Image 1 (spheres, rainbow, N blue to C red):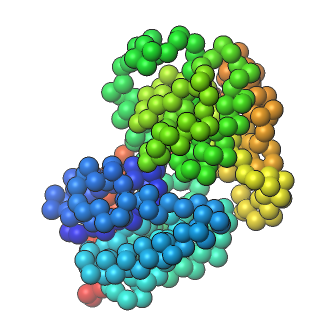
Image 2 (spheres, rainbow, N blue to C red):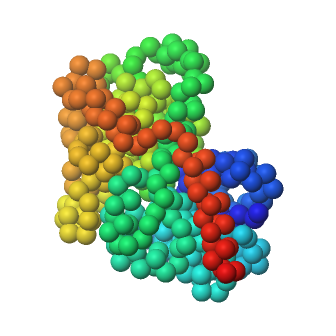
Length: 383
């Protein structure tokens, strides 16, 4: 069968690539065409647009690149319609993907599946109308989403979380010692604190400098930045100092050896928890006090990090908008480093969180459910 996938950022590229492998195991004749990234390209198929041409974040960047975004959207609609796949699989990225879903549902009989639900439970809950109208089947990776969608009379499939799969596979094959890790990079033997400042340039610009300023108060540790896929090294060098190291393509390797981490909210917070690395969630924004007020007024959920949302309580401290400062980062980091009073409590909460997420195998379960749903759709269509 023919599968068309649309991804808008690095985490989606990872999860979609694993889904593609699982689909190919279930369907050896699978053909893929996609808006995606390098990991998807390694699986095979035709990459018609790289996600880097889509990944604009924030009002001003989106406004400045609006013509490009609209041009990509028009191209995507036409390309999906022309290729006429057996199914369109959308991966997160709701601002773009829900527009595509609306068009495809209105103009074709191509079934639309959604993998990794739009986070409408956080805000823009009104989008449930679009999903119920335009999406034939939704496959969730967050356990609390099941009840949210059930409340709206829309059934979803919880398939487990693909981060569990990725981390589990990495840990099973990983044998490196800490000494081997730092020696390979010609670093000293001080314990490592990982800095994960986001996957987009705006996030990195806003957060990394503050993280590094806070790091200077901890001379007994060495701080290492995990470079994001698709971000050139020169971009980072504007913000890091001579005492801060940076690695690319080694985020899991870095987390395997980190004593603690400073993490910008996103998928990385969950991955850090799965590696059992205590963390502080850091998400600076300009006009922080105003954003903090708007957050309380607009957001439907009490947390921004996946760790806290899944746990249903504050497992990790969130320094967001007006709460994010160098002083606050130093205070909270001290609490989770070895000997800190919050470290063991956080590690114990991680174990409970991991039990809630369930076992590895999300991509395989998603692929099986998709094929079953696709068969049911075809029977309904031709009944």
